[in-house]
Image (cartoon, rainbow, N blue to C red):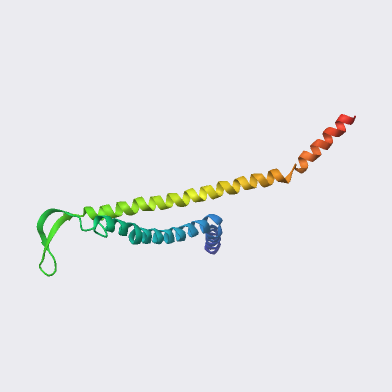
Length: 147
């Protein structure tokens, strides 16, 4: 009996994996990873270089606020300060905003393409003429009118 339970569970798992939703989710995750790499390259390679040309620094990671000096010592005995890393936060914020803008552009282009395709489908249906049901209804009405 335990064997039939395993077969049922294995079959359920196979059905789950083979379902369209699972495959679509896997594709979405893989594409999201690839888009993340592209956005990071765009942010680091282009946008932050423009910031560097304007501000004189390639990024803001060096901007810090020291809260306390000599909080601890590293392995070599050098003092470590307690710092708020404001620049790292600014870099992350810029990346978030740029990622949002890129994703917005992608979704906007997708919606435009989808709307265009829908309009083309409506035009094709209109060009196809009346349906079989419409024609049969017209014939029926014409026969009734004759009688």
